[in-house]
Image 1 (tube, rainbow, N blue to C red):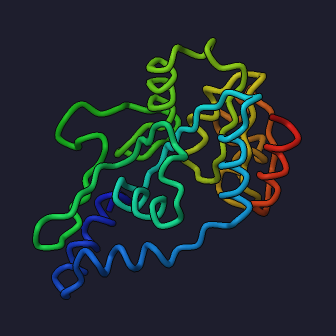
Image 2: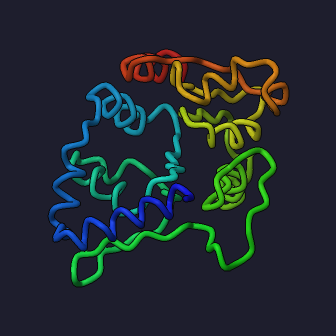
Length: 205
């Protein structure tokens, strides 16, 4: 079963077992956000010597992301969020849908994005909405999943991928025989802990 559909299926099961909106929200609020990650991003956003645009491109869903950001006081961090749509019904069921409707035109990605979203196409659309690639001196992309390879292929030589160690994207980028890896143009900067992202932001941006 496709990932987004599988999540929606389990949300329906939880609802049938009596779990409602508060239960889902309370569970989401237990998910940790590393202090260095929150501090590093918010400090960068507050800087006056660097103009930044923060974009969240996620295969999660709008309710999960909004709930966690608000819980940690980070709701003003992102200038734009692109993810799968979700909303609570009056009876407490969290309805989750694919961003790309399975009954409509499909994205046709050849790199390996999941059916619900092509992250490469979404990154290109974001850039078009914000003045094009020329409007950005540098793009820093933070990712770890296999579906992050597609947007990484769109990055330029002056851009950077902050790739989490030993996750699927890291393994792909370090496998010279993997499809499309030879097409990566940006610099690759591995990280293991959130404090390394904070350090990169301070020293390189």
